Image (cartoon, rainbow, N blue to C red; front, side):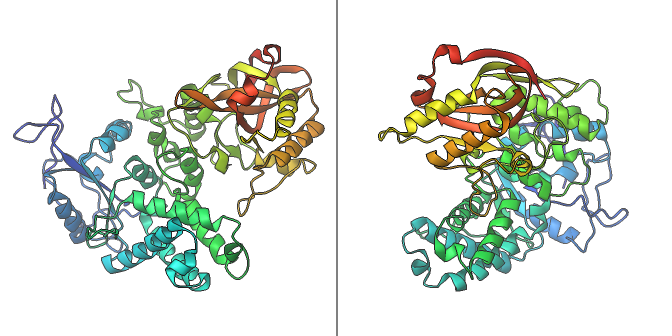
Length: 510
């Protein structure tokens, strides 16, 4: 195996092949260095290839995987072979290029090196089989020909088997799996995992099939079906939900709000604290800190500096996405900054390019943010919500959710936890009204406003509007703190508000 350096014009090798097809291997190894130990032999490098503790995986098994990749493409991108891990400048430059490197690969492989093919295949089959039956619906367990008491324990064991592989504990691999949802699963011994279909074909299993199965399973186990919520199945169902939640794959991947993976990142491991930013920022297509491509000056930033820089870049790119979460605990920085202890309520779990921002939130080195956009009093929106909720033809719903620490510190605020999540998210119109009324009663009608964050657009028309709940001094919005989120049907309410009730706002968000 030879490491070839990129030449001008993206040419590689002795034949100067331009932009050749290549494969990528995503795996985890950095936590088990073995200085001076055996490592794969590679020519063409000017650095020492890192050695890994052979009690984890061996050089021979690594070669098996590389040979498997070589059956399809002559070129491959493997981090220890392509990046000098001891050269900080080179490493950070490559980190900044992760999106392009993964996007341009012809094929990506996930190496689950703790699982032999027979064990991995059996666990995968159990998970996808149960998910397929749930998707077909109606009498779910009848289709499986087993009662929940027999199915759930074996399903839990299969999920623990797959998610127990070290690949699902690394933050870097969480990012890589989301960047390439078509990544193909490989076992410990470089075996392909088959994905069973109704046809005679057996395509190779990929991350997207596993993630779709997790989404289906979590949806039905979080439903109000008493077969899952009552004893003796509730404990097992809750355990399965928690495993899926911590994996970072709780919803359909194509429309997922990346803040879901950000929230799951606290359950993943990194070698360096700064990697909690560097190891996930590619999901947002953002580069910050020393990973900014071709940065003229690189300094090893502190974690707090990197957090602020990332939050600023995220809100500059999309204030809507930058606020589509709730704080689970009091933020250690400012309320507008995304932190690592957040939750994404179900109503805010989807984000795509058609969701546009209508305000600006610009962070600065002091930690505060300058905010500009349209605001109105929450009491005015609440009045309209009440008026429209009385109309029999009003089918669209609105939603409000507070940051969890606000709920905990203000017990008088109305709260209806969602099943198995502990969120203060409200699904029905009456409960939303009760929640908003209790907010206004607790803080005062002149102290809570709504900043219009942006719109969800469908077929060129605004479908939902999103707002940020702001707490401020009575009739003084110059300085405010975020306390939650809300969303409402765009056409039914936005048009009904009188223009005078929406005002342009310039202020500081703490």
